[in-house]
Length: 468
Image (spheres, rainbow, N blue to C red):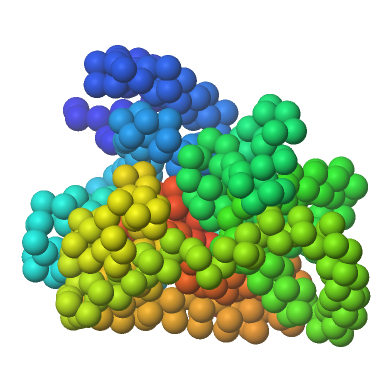
């Protein structure tokens, strides 16, 4: 008699399968065994201890482990993680597709529109091959998102999602703190002079800043939860908040700092408008007095590089973006093609200092070269892509805001969470005018996954409220 699918996974066969997986990895990823094998062994341990830990574990791995360790190594880890999650999904539902978790209908349609705009722009692109790679990466991203969506939404474990995001931010912060303090006072002096930045494990400080723009406000909001009443929990939260705040300042990412400020201001206002006004007046007066001190004012000016606000490379890149858009208005130049149109639309002379700054972005930026999410989307996907993007953002904000209003008198904990998530979305929207990644970056897992997991949290809370 043929064994059922479930019987395949008894203990003895698990060990055989586990051994086979390590052997397979040894052949395929021989150059990166120091990363892949420990990851597989850890997965095995998590399987035996409890499968519930697998999903938060891979959220942290996908977000906190940067691609700067090596593109091939990161790809290997993504493959191992994705196959593990697919394996768990198949084990749970087998091939009974009618039992699979159904994704939110509006979100599903928006995902189809996103993929449609990518495919349409690719077909009309000057280099279809580049576009096809971007489309495939975006499809893989949505598959990975569904794997998390299926597990977290079915179990209703919204805290697992949010805590995983905070832990990811703490890990990134530890890397930044180590980088800063291991350099002695040198990097700190450079930071204060506006000349130094640190991304820790991430070479791109904007990437690290994007993660902290979500994890730091989330950690702050946890202090308002009833579950955080225990003293040791509050001490851990305060320590993580302090660590992430230091790391955020060390990134010197003005977009991320602005995002956090906007998120926390909105969160405080929605939480208690009366208290917010009093605190805001106190902070405003304190800041004014600090700025009156010449030394302090100078340090703040140097740190935020206020003297170079109107001499920023971003403005030149935005000129390039506008030039590209004017010539490719409706369907854009194709996903992943912005880099190749930078020099044909160069607004400065070759060999000039400004050109050398653009050259740095051209050579070392892995994506998001436009430094503005909306300009990037319009450049690569045209007005069609921009409209789809705006529809996605509108749906995310509308759903989040309505949820926040709906749970206000129903559940204090859910109100706190829906409040901070909506506030973070507004902060990220502000950040998107200065950074191109963090929402839709053609499947860039570590950059976009936090945003999508935040919205998954909204859908989980919404589902719980509707059931009751």
